[in-house]
Image (cartoon, rainbow, N blue to C red; front, side):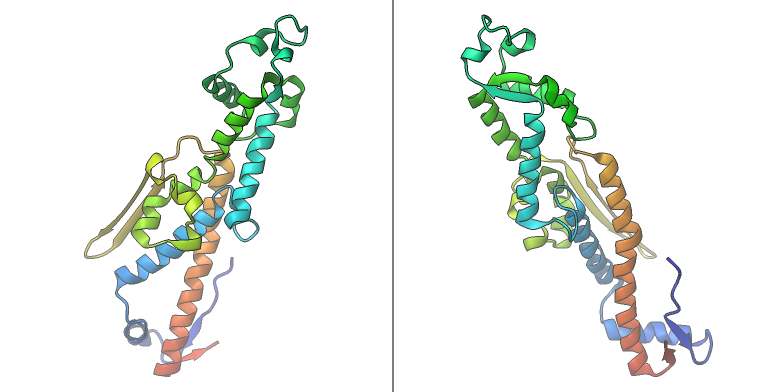
Length: 246
């Protein structure tokens, strides 16, 4: 993205210091307050980009429901729910793994092996494992209850910077005590250092998430900061009359 010329100083670089003083007076916030406000917006944007959400294209309850539907579809590519009769050793369709003790733990391990980058490909459905319908439904309910856990990995940052309400809804917050998360802000005389992490171990497609984070940091964050700079500078310009606004 090409750098914009936000303003042209009337009297050269010497007016830069005067403009900085004027801007600070207009904003009436400390450096820490400005950085906290900016980081709050950034954390909100990152949460909005964390699956099953996808920014403005898919978010909120609609994203939760879609995440639950996707979870069920992928599980059913691995397992087929059948009656007890079809699991009988006398049935020629029931062989090998189909007749073993199919616990939730076994289903979870089998499901995990079938996943690639957080997804189960359609081709897997050609060789589905037959399991009891009740057991399959129980496993699907359990997996659906985890929807939102990946986004909950940002809860430490959300708490630290005050992200609440629809930007961090209850279906994400319910996982807070179960997933790893951290956030830290260190203030020194010359700078402010902010770090926050999502430590969820069972993240889905990490490659996609990395691209989304990169986009949020490199484009959306820049856009948000530029918008704030524009408003602040414009307010300062209109009051101080020391620059020409372009």
